[in-house]
Image 1 (tube, rainbow, N blue to C red):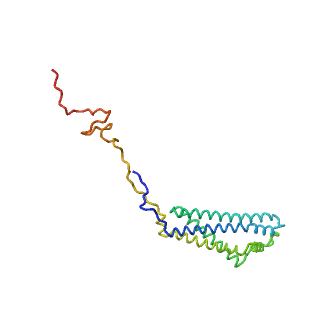
Image 2 (tube, rainbow, N blue to C red):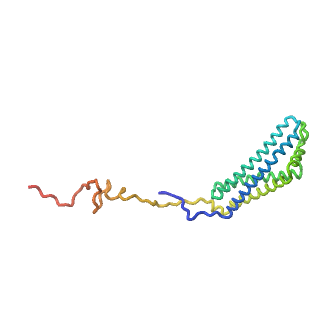
Image 3 (cartoon, rainbow, N blue to C red):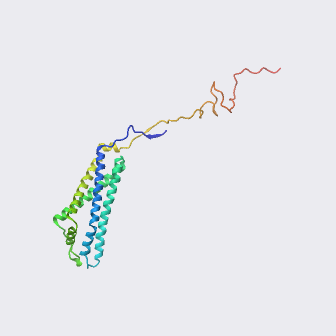
Length: 242
C-alpha cells in the first residue's frame, strides 16, 4: 500500500500572502539602505572620535570601539535584509516553517526597533542624564554626540528615522497578514491519500495457471518444461495381460 500527496489543483497564493511577501522585500530594501548610510558615515564618525579622544590615555580604544559598533550595526542590517529575502521566497511558496520564522523574527524586529526609536525620542527630549563629563580627562559625551550629528548630513538622520518607522509598521503588517485565515489555508499541508498501483503482476506470475507449485487449470495445457501433475487419471485402465 503506497501513499502519495494528490492535489486537486495547484495552490494559488492569496493576495494577503502576496502583500506580506512584498512587504518583506520592502523591509530588505530599507535595511540595505540603512547599511549603505552607515557605511557612508563610518569615516566621519571615526574622525570625530579620533579628534575628541586625541591626547587621552587609551584614546585609540574608544575610536576602535566606536568603529566596531558601527560595523556590527552595518552587518546586522545586511543579515536582516538577506533573511527577509529568503523568508519572502519561502513564504511565497507556502512553506509553513518559514512563516513561523517570519513571525519570530518580525516580532523581535518590532521590539528592538520600537525600543530604539523610543529611547532616541526620550534622549532628544530630555537629554542625557548621568553622563560623567571630564572624568579622568575624558571629553564630554554630549559634546561628542553633537560633533557626530554635525559631521553627518541632517537628511541622513531623517531618512534613517523614517526608514525605521516604516520597517516597524511593515513588520507588524506582515505578522498580521500571515495570520489571516486565507494565509492559514495556503500554508496548510496537503493530506496524503492512498493511490492504487497502476501496474499489476504480469501474466504467468505467482498464482497464475501453469506455474510451478500450481496445477494447470482444466482446459489449459501444462506449462512448457513441467510434467503434468500426478494423480488419478480419467482414462480407462489397461486390460490385464494374458
